[in-house]
Image (cartoon, rainbow, N blue to C red; front, top):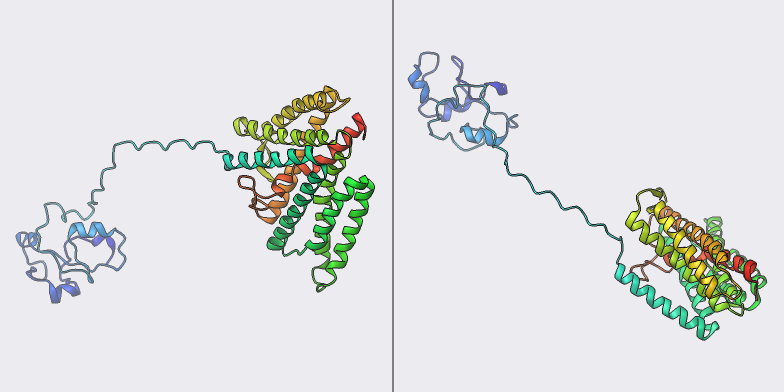
Length: 376
């Protein structure tokens, strides 16, 4: 029995199976019953288990189901069953307009208060150590390098199964920073070579499976973190070393701040959406402007024999290298499938998330300062 016969008068001589045993007061079989009796007679059609119409429709019409309750002895309203094609009335939609959802507020994407607090605290430690005892600042750089290496090697092992030897990297990384401060570029290169050799030998104590990828990652980590950080220690060896390091730090922070502030407020065009969707071209322009102005001021008032136009050049270079360094670490994190390298610094992530723009900027600033004002 198809769906179109639901609610229609029964055909001549047909009785549903359930009517024969349970329907009470039904009219006689066949076409002999009159119209008046038909008004008090309700046929009981066989209802499929999954009717095409909704259950509410069946309940409203009082049709019985084989597995449902008995037939209700209610007199249907006129016209309810007389027209088989009649469709149930659907509820009228509410005419009251729905309130529009409030527009989402633009978010900075991180805990700005925590980020500022941690940044100010780190800055105070760095400046105090920088101008009080140079050796203390070198120790701060060495500690940052070791923690950064730990974060990087830990994420490599967790996400890629790459076991870069941490012990030779940590010892060699700290030695690079100290050698760069004591012996300059020559000492730094010797420490890099010995660290790479130590990584190769240390990894030999484990099974050969994965040896090549482990030592490759170890050598990469040695160059990426401690070797680049060595140029900060080399800047410190000059007579005005603390002011050179302060200029390097200030310009990098100013560049990041300009990119963040301008990009958050005016950014619309993505700079590298596949690498870092949050960075915009407008943010890059802000980084360049902020860094060039900061560079002109620093070279004019902080660096001996420095001039404002040299600061413009250094500021432009800092904006470029800081942005590339940030994108480089974003590329690494994309490959690893993580957002931050660590959670050590609230509002910032890990140490590596703060070193990403500083590391590639250090050799560039060191070189330009040597060219403009000399190494003394």
